[in-house]
Image 1 (cartoon, one colour):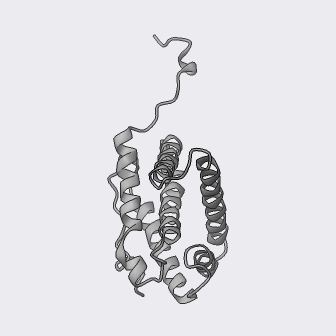
Image 2 (spheres, rainbow, N blue to C red):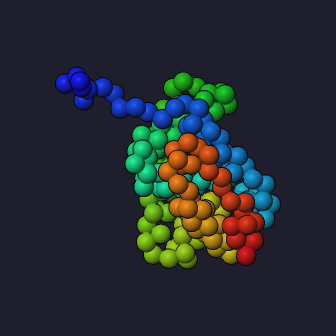
Length: 183
């Protein structure tokens, strides 16, 4: 028999190990040297942050279509926020400044993801322009076009993943070379 108060229970969240695995894959992919060496992503704190945001956006975008994706997306975003908070504190940012920096991170995330989502409704060139502005500091549109081709290849690869691979954190990103970043 079901108890009549089941609807008061907190929804199940994704297992911590799964979230850590997915986030670890995102961070690892964002650290791929090819992005910095061949695609002109600035090898700076901001460049790495913007590439991390791009990969996080790609994964969160795909998770929206998975039945368990809402809880998984929220847990992944929360893990990202906790990681950013921890990084700020490790860098010696004072307790009083951390909330302002976190607010700036949130604004950056939501601003960039809105720009990328809007660009997807238009064209690859619009996505390249958005990536050029946000990831490449408004420079080198040709490299931004390659980055847009890579992002589209990642979207296609994630779309081919089944729900179990996504929810279990067992999917893999395509390599930038194989995904057309060199094209």
